[in-house]
Image (cartoon, rainbow, N blue to C red):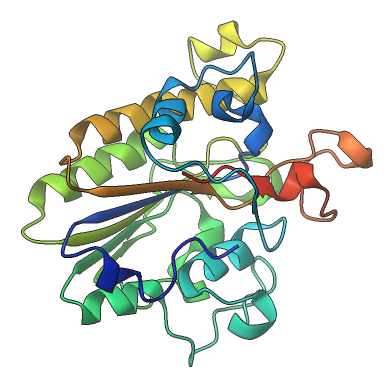
Length: 250
């Protein structure tokens, strides 16, 4: 899936653009996509007031390749980032951030997990690429991360300091396994901690959305979903069933 075409800066007419990517969030676990037990009022409101893409599909069930596709408009076999940790973005590939820079935008990125460290090439075109995970903790699969509240705090400071049009990419990792939502979501979603993580993300996204200028273009999507035990896969990364590839986009 390519969320934004590389010509996007020329269609925004100088408005700031905030791209939020939610790691490991499958579409059918949001209220806007029909999940009756979801607590996602912010994401549902964004979908209702904007555009809801009903059939957005990820190009892969894994983080680095999908983000590289989101930021280049290319499939993995063209942009070169074909797996986490062992591939990097090809040096001759132009990124969305570079296009925004050419159009006169300030460009900033805030990522929340080591899998998107700048060493893998996605920092190209960003004036500031914040992959500082100080204070984070290791989770399953050896990925160090920081929580959404920390990353949203960073984003709010960047937005407040902006002087002119800004392209800001914010990546939030919380819904990735292990599923350990903070209070009160750990209690509210005792039987479905994955949904608790998404509810927590939704609340943090609300803080960001409330701070945006009305003219700012906000785009929210996910890099991939999660199998949650379906088809014999506990999480994601192997199979390409809809549970791992159908993502929200609004």
